[in-house]
Amino acid sequence: MQGLMAVFQKEFADHFSSKRFVILFTLICLAGLSATYVAAQSIRGELLDKPDQQFVFLQLFTASSGVLPPFISFIGFLGPLVGIALGFDAINSEKSNGTLSRVLSQPIFRDSVINGKFLAGLATISLMLLSIVLIVAGLGLRTIGVAPSVDEAARILVFLVVCIVYVAFWMALSILFSVLFRQTATSALAGIAAWIFFVFFISMISGILANTLVPLGQDPDANTAIAHEQVDQMVSRISPSTLFQEATVTILTPGVRTLGPVLVRDVVGMIPNPLSVSQSLLVIWPQIVGLIALTSICFAISYAKFLREEIRA
View 1: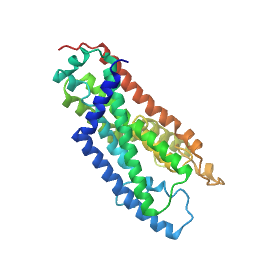
View 2: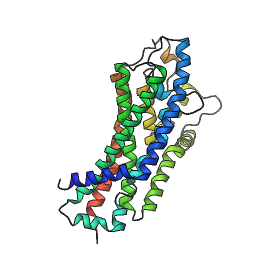
View 3: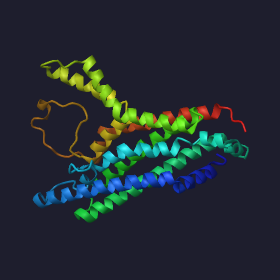
View 4: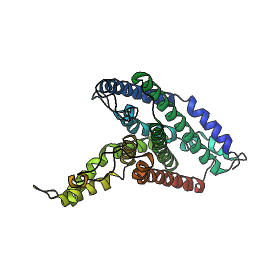
């Protein structure tokens, strides 16, 4: 596509030179380092009592001493803000400043503009999260003195890919709002409203719907409790934050075998062996596909809308 690399390079340079990116990167990096340092101190104490523990390095991303949430919680909470900040003014700010019509008057295809902006944001997100994960892993390696195994390194790589897709969804959603709304403030508020709804309100809505459709009563039986939990999970999985949480916890905790409700009789006699990386991927594959599908749908709608709308000088 003609002009794609020009748009990509320009947007990529703008992202890394913007103050909002520096602020968000610093915020997430400091939060991640603080959570990792506190978790590493707790892990060091446990290693003195049980030196033969498995998957110690993965606990840097999931463990919490109660003072701070784990590292994955900070990514799940602050990651959407990065995606929203990178995309809420991608299109409408160019229209307001009158630069979009000037760009399209050059030998640049219209789809190259939106594709270049999305790819530049995706590259920025990838480098940002890769840097943060490497910094956190380096701090943990120096603090606990335990190097990751090949299996742990593979799980961290899958975790990084899931984080990139998760933040890319929020960027695609904010780009969609930037195409739909003419004012940058409106698109930013729409993105923040979606973030608040999916992160905070969806769990309350899923609980209310589960209690309405499958009430537990005073002494519910096992089938009723399972049906109630299934409805709760089905509604909560509408949120990309729930999909991200389930995928990351499963891939970073090899002992997790299922994401659905489990009865006691189903686990009696089961040998508590950790799953391999491929088996954990099979468990979270629906969550990964769901995040990719949501990202693709948001970008496809914004792509089609942008190509059909009229742009005047």
